[in-house]
Image (cartoon, rainbow over all chains, first blue to last red; front, side, top):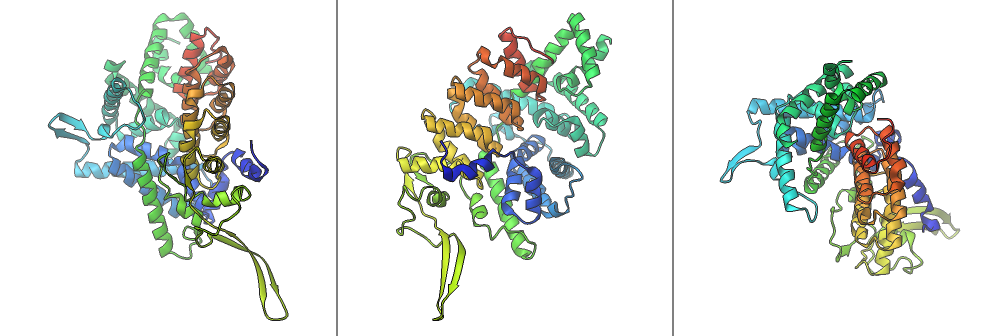
Length: 205
Length: 305
């Protein structure tokens, strides 16, 4: 179905994403390359920030701070570790900073009291997706709220390890590198997190 | 290995985070111990529950984040003019962050792909028209020829932008959209084009474009959008073949999850081999669980777990 004029484009599209090439291009000032790097990871970054902080405003701040740090320091990146390890390390640190600041401000909750009772503002974000089943939506809301509450009971480190392993699919070795710890320590952290989550969510199973 | 040791290892066994030797010892114990098999089943039910969490990223938040980042980077670059960054000079890059994520199907205003039309299909549309043209977006000097009278003849290649509007029934619009799906420099344009095209995947040419996008596009967001368009064609042989390939080879777990969900919506024996490969190669626990359930339902061998 392709005509000759699109052959070159197709050949480019068929090639796998060359992350190293993109990083090098971005380091030499290629805006498109940096944009592609951002877009390859930004949904994951936003999801981690949302799940960890339970606040759209703070997730937005984490997104900006993390990618600006990457932008400002990209030229110093020497491929000593993988790009995603470096990026997630930055994201993790920015998230932890937010949690620490929040602790100082004592605002560690998105739950507010309304006339309908206590409501988690984050779980009230309008669900996207067409033609969702209302019963399914209710179940999803309850489950999401239950999982969110269970995650809130973990320590920030356990929460981060759990998010990165379970929801982002990173290997424990990579998580250890991101957190500046050993694979074994990350494994222990994941084990504790899994046990706590399972106990907390027993009623749903 | 006793039961207490096995129970302690089950979460890491589920994540595939234990050594092959430990995995063998656990599996050997499981074949003989009913209680531990039940514990494994309970753990899998818990993992399935976690995977049911459905909290999509708010697209408005994502778009806002991208726009804010863009603004901040442009501001920083402008205040440091000699950094070598090419943000302000990159016209295409500049437009990329300002394309909205969703465009109403009936009122297409594809500003950004005007130049593609001029590039890909000049003959059909009679080349670049004078009416409605704005200043050239890009120009390249191809030759310079001074003559004895003092004049200089300069050959310039120019690309102009124009707005093309119409519905999907208009063959010009359709052709531009199909070209835009392959617009390599701008994933935003590709996502938008697929969002419009996916409702017409009953047309073979559109379905093929979606298959190409899901198989080859470097951007996972574009691949996911194309997958969305292929959902209702899960029984089509070409679609199934492409999705099987995606399931085995795509490097993004989110895309693979969508692929297995679409594939299993219409299960048949032809995917047994693919699912068995998944059981051997896949790291993601949700995908493995889906593949395992399906193989069990089809009474097929699960292979190495």
